Image (cartoon, one colour):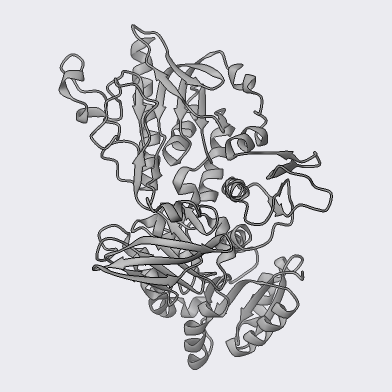
Amino acid sequence: MSDPMILLVTAENEEVLRAQFGRYAAEYAVRVAPSLEEGVVLIRRAEEEGAPLALMVLDTTLPTPSLKHALHEQRALVPTARRLAVTPWPRFLEHAQGLRHKVAMGAFDAHLLMPRGVRDEEFHSAVVELLNEWTATIAAPQVETVRIIAPPGDPVARELHDYLFRGGTPHGVHPPGPGDVGPYPQVAMQDGPPRHVPDVRTLARELFGRSDVASLADVDELLDVVVVGAGPAGLAACVYAASEGLTTLALEAGAVGGQAGSSSMIRNYLGFPRGISGMRLSTRARSQAIRFGARFFPGWEAEELVPGEDGAPHRVRTEAGELLARTVVVATGVAYRRLGVPALEELVGRGVHYGAAMTAAREMEGQDVVVVGGGNSAGQAAVHLARFARSVTIAVRRPDLRSTMSAYLITEIAANPRITVEGSTRVVDGGAEDGDLAWLELERDGTRERRPVQGLFLLLGAEPHCEWLPEAVRRDPKGYVLTGRDVPGEEWRGGLPPAELETAVPGVYCAGDVRSGSMKRVASATGEGAGVVAHIHEHLARTD
């Protein structure tokens, strides 16, 4: 395959843009076209040579007819490419007003001021972010530290693939060769021999050097904090606890990042004006926590919490044994509800996916897809899938998305010609051809319609899974953990409620989506995860 292309569409500023993008010429084919029409010729030629378009840079000083055509057509031209609008300083204020709504609608990924000199690293940091996201979600991996070997369509291989993607681990999926022998899937790490890996938990333990149960059992010291769950809340708790000198250990049964880790692009998270994928946010937070000394044990699940009494440490039981902790943070998040249609449950991994399943998006090219759910995760999944799929239908039980989804996503969805929202609609049946999803039956206002669909992505709200917690950790009728003043009055101590994020058990805290009354947003989860550390310090000071 030829080098991926960066296309600069400019009539007046070719010299400036050529100079600025010259630094990328070693790994990208940088091409210039004076109009979008001539750019299309370059794109088609590159496609014939096997060179994908990674980034289109559109100079907004193009002549008005050409600019209007470009604004209308460029998203449909190569949906998988990242799109950047640039404007020279003298015209920026004039053009920014007219282009702001185009960025909000997703026509562009960013609108930037054209550099006025050399080493404009703020400009190039934005370019690198766009190329980074394109590489992570679109490009074939150039390096494989892990190889998955499995027959096409293997559902467990799909889960392994998704887990590695969410962890930012370079990997590839390959069919068995002539001399390969099952059972499958098999995983080869670095130059090691392939071995059968039956599930994600086994892969997580092997990948992070903890395939031996004794390795977790070797943690025999009294820990200041055990964090159960490594989604946004758990990651924030790890960063702040470890940075303040507390011995911190995190257990995570699945992929670091939780549900947020599967989001293709979170655009309303503070400090990231061009957005950030859940995978990037999660891997950066994990690296940050490790830098401060936190320890992570992916692939390990907390099986039971035994509260300490009379100053004794809490015990968190796992398959490997017990962890002793002065405090525990419950940050296990929530899991997507099951659809409950038996015919479709049998097709999970074969066209039916719970969660965003970003790794499956590439396989939806030219296909028809349905996303079920009305929250931000569903909206983000639909926008990402629309880069590949021929059509994306969002099916939601409510009449529309206004009560459940952020306005910026509703705006972007409404402006995307590939996405349709169908309110008061639910999926009631489906079936397969040749083993993969081929059709769905949707019901609306008592009328059923059968339509061909090759991808179903289910983001159906959430349910907490707190079976491992003792009854002493009180929960609301839906199973969410009660904290602070929401804890029943008979559990208050000395007539005072527990601390804001503390459960009915002293020294056991809760943060994020699993907490009753939480906002179910990434930013609020990270805020709670950070805030719980102040309460931990107060508890430790009282019990020392």
